[in-house]
Image 1 (cartoon, rainbow, N blue to C red):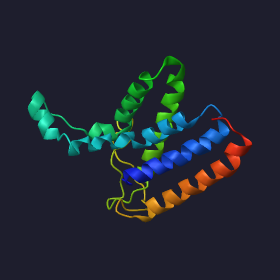
Image 2 (cartoon, rainbow, N blue to C red):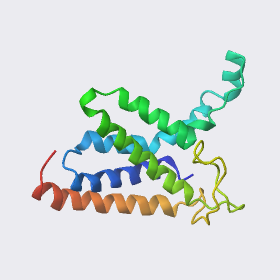
Image 3 (cartoon, rainbow, N blue to C red):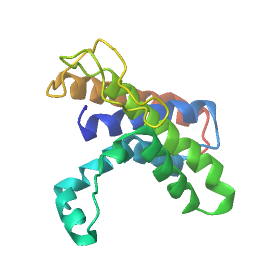
Image 4 (cartoon, helix red, strand yellow):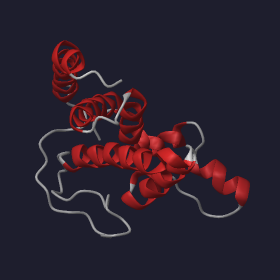
Length: 168
């Protein structure tokens, strides 16, 4: 997986560009896109609370893996949309889903020696998909490219879009 910072930068870029088209997307909704881009990495909670600890605590087999699958992310996105006032639920759901989709788009481009992705689309597709990856998760050029893209979009947004079309 690309690192968390890269996912958030891509979520920011996507949110800002979408705000140019959809005027109701103010900064809080752009933040929701950024949060959505980070949601699949909630699986990393295992660094703080290992699966073995949860298994021992509850006495049943447990894994955090479904959090990094479309089905688990869809559940988290739905819960997140329920946490906001009713009037904002659809927009927040859409923003979180767009951000999470960008996360999966980046993860599908990871190079895997087997040539097959992990089953990210579970429960809709239970097997991995054969995709030639573009980068390794250890590559740092992706972070630099995402930061450059976010910086360029930030400049365009500040210099042209917000001055000519203020809506936030």
